[in-house]
Image 1 (cartoon, rainbow, N blue to C red):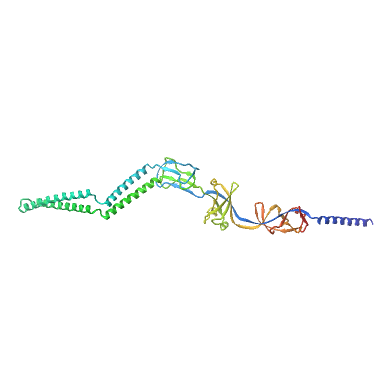
Image 2 (image 1 turned 30 degrees about the horizontal axis):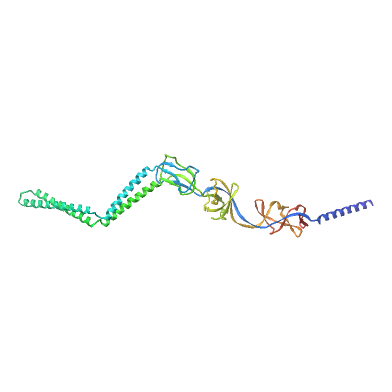
Length: 395
């Protein structure tokens, strides 16, 4: 009897406990939810790059000389047209002046050839003819006298030959003076004018060349930028053609080395996000080296910094190259549950519904997940007190 009462009491106790548990299970748990949205985000390649100038210009003199003046200093900001360095130009000035005088003289000769003979030139030529004619007449008279005397045996043969030679010379001088007079009256020949012109053009080119060397003995910047370095001091001898000053342009780029796999995903014009000292800027790929660096086997890529702000050369920059766009649902990582599988509970028709999800990518503090739908109500608090199919209600 006593055993029977014990068993009955135990059954009633179990019945009471069962009833209490049922009451708790039928009571809706309080939860909080958040509606997830389908989002479009950029697909990026992340790299660390270095700030560089997009070009480093090396300025040199085309002629050697003593460095006379330095007008800038390393690190100084310069503008296009600023004077940088200057050689001692005294010798170059003398050469330029001499070339100018030669050119002017050649031009005068050319003008004279084009203008033709002046009246005084013609008169002088006529006087020369008259002198030559008088000399010829006198030589002819002397020859005739010598001939008669020679035939009579009054003079020697050598005296006769001497008179004959004097006549021949006088004849040639007369003919030459008449030819000069004829040419003077006729004017300068076309070939003489052409020759004078050619001499002038040659001398003028020599002058231009010497003047250019004089001008180029002053180095002038043709870009906006900064002085990177000055390689000589005032008073030093500079050889022609050797760099004397280095100028980095104002435009800056970020240089990164892309792997062989990633370089296929990027092209000139690809947009980028650049972060320097926790500040973000936009950028764009401007060049990709098609030959890999021998040391790293990466492809050097330059990205423009589309900002007026100037950075120190060599600064570190975080770079995100935007290669495409991804559509998906991003969920904050703490909302994701795991019991060997990643899952969440969603609120649907007053019940908690378990949905297994796949984490595709981690972006900052969120995860790109697969397995949810747009506008799903994900339970974010109270999930510890529920299971799949539990009745729930929002706070």
